[in-house]
Image (cartoon, rainbow over all chains, first blue to last red):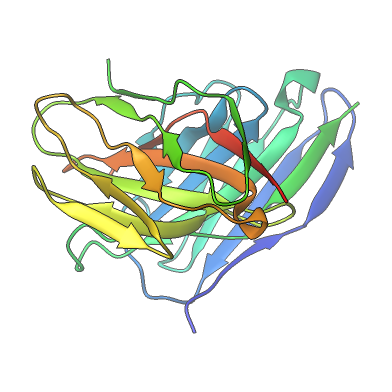
Length: 114
Length: 111
């Protein structure tokens, strides 16, 4: 069964802290995405990737780095976390080989920056 | 720039009412269009898609028709149920596989 797994599910850090959010998909999908979800803004795209070693800039990339180490794994890095990055983060994946396939989402990681 | 606009932040209905949630997009060419639903504590779930003008997508009684002239993909359901209460997202995908979502519409259905 297709799956996208995010870890941790919840994370609390302090301002200036270093945080890594992990995402693994076991679907053999080419594309992976990181979004943040905030009330009134919906889902906003941070970064995305079409394969290991590739990174594409999304719409709200400031303060975030990302790295796609393998086909399965996509990481979101906050090197100097700020309270404005308190949010619910979602990872998603999709298969470029299937025409117009919609991204499949994980369960989310809730991040609080104090 | 590229965007998706959902004009209703929240819609409150009674069971068996007719639902319309408006979605307009700004994108070049023929983007693929999607509707997602999100329940509390879960990630967004794909409902259906359409990829060409006048194509209708549907699932679980919900439907929407791709209207390139109006740049719209409005979600409709003839008779809502309390279990339809959730947040609904419109989205599009470009040929470059960037996927952009709207701000979401919260649907509240009372019995």
